[in-house]
Length: 259
Image (cartoon, rainbow, N blue to C red; front, side):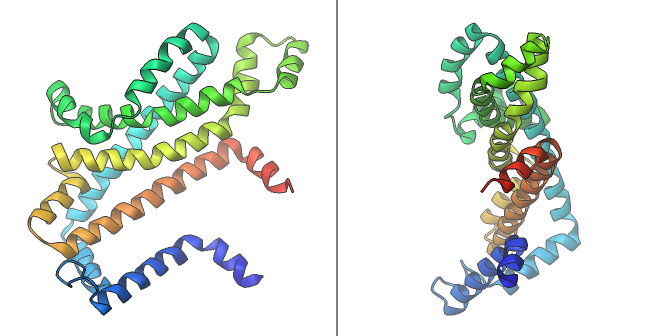
């Protein structure tokens, strides 16, 4: 039981170590040519070289900043649209077809259009990230707000709360756990969107470094950058979970106590 508790507590590092171990075994067995599948020591050496040179910290900082800014924008816009859809059935009915049309567009397909419209720079990244990540918070928010039970709403009306108070003091807090599920999904998409954008139209960041190292056939560098992208995803997910605990900790504690 103690071992199981320890593994659950450190499941992230344990999972990473398992991946590293399996990777090294495959590389040692040379199931794939070493030129295209280097071992962990070679990847670690490339990582350390890029770290000491400063290019990794610079590129990673830019990518993380773009992903987090885009995610913040998508959360604000997505939740606002969800609230507007809940307040106005007319808006909801008119916006749903737009969401169904735009949501499936992959980030790579947006880059050429965005370059022509916005040029290269911060506006390009913000546009692409927000356009592909706004939908999980919006859709989860619409569903959660609509699913608020009648009992708390009737209780609020009995206490003399206005429609605005019911929305912001009853419905929105009750919807936040579900909204954060959408935000967690959007966080993953935001990192994918920014890396793809940097690969196709960037001149810095991890995506640009990945494509430049790949064309230069610096394979250990490419894999090192891939692991950095994975760690970035874990970092963003941790930040979202911390924010979720701060805002919806009551729901998490209540759920954990439920048999």
